[in-house]
Image (cartoon, rainbow, N blue to C red; front, side, top):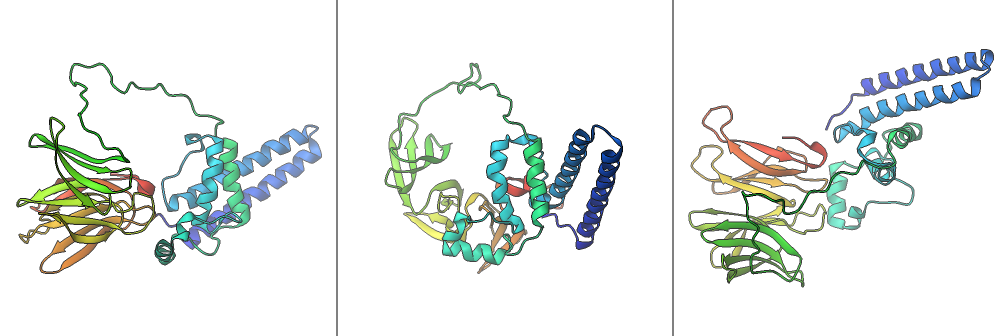
Length: 333
């Protein structure tokens, strides 16, 4: 999170005041000496709104993410998005509350996080200036992009349909290894499974899970299964890593909607560690779980949105490093 100091914000407000006073003086001169005062007043007033709104957005919106230009969305979307952004600045719309707060577990975690301040961080005038800036500078519609063919003609790949399907919520995981498919899937009754299917489409084995499967890896003949937890986008830590022998056995739980994990020795102690991307929603992070007789969690990145790891020894010091793709508020690599 980029946090501006109190002094920086105070200096900015002084600059805004100076600009406003300058604009008022200009308007006074125009009213006194120009026969086209009405038109010019409107131009100057709009310029003040433009400057204030843009500068305020560049201070407050970047607390959570990179500065969004008004052109990235049409007006109707900004009118839906901005009221919810107000929650992050203590400017909740009247009569509205986040649906997340209806879940007592999630409400407690979000209250403790301080992500949604109970008191306003900006004035009504400043917040309205930001809203007006996006409303006045966003397009009615975005340009129509050309649709891509789902199956483009190419000599490199062939399209083949696996003669197997699930009659439910669809696939959550898919991999191919040793002449068989590994799939995570949900049924129409909401149950989650890990299944193995022969390349011919014949089911081989299946194991029921508590929550949807999103990744599988193996170590010394034991499969490790990563379950996201509740598929619904909510900050309830119900994700887990299970060990699969005869049946799945929980190993690490209370994960925040994890989507990727790597099993490797990151500290060169001869024992495998777990690097986990806990995507979350508002809450999440990148965590390493080390096991030296007792499982210890170390947080490497405190924000939500981690998606995928690539492991390398980047600085050639003999220790494993990693690249990570991050979405949500902190979009980066």
